[in-house]
Length: 126
Image (cartoon, rainbow, N blue to C red; front, side, top):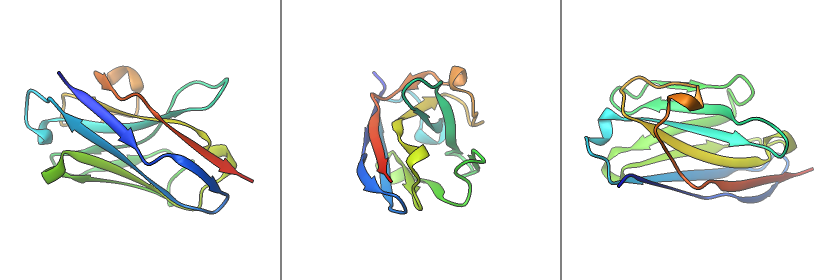
């Protein structure tokens, strides 16, 4: 059974940093065969893609709203993907989810993902 467990959320002031972790287990195939995405959903808003990574080649993608502030990375030895978030803004406040798809091609669209974590709350105070 595939499990994705997010951690690292919390309350931070504007301009602060947080690092989210997504620990994956139970994959049928090798970790490299999966793409991992980070998504977020703020109250009253639709879920949006934040960043994603191709574990096989390390290719990454970022939403324009976080480009230059967030960095996604992968530790294959730990089957864990990280999202380093710097220069946080109040508009970054949301529940952050990681998701996995059994493909080496990443996607920014949530419907392309097969497995989801439970989410972790990030709150940025002004």
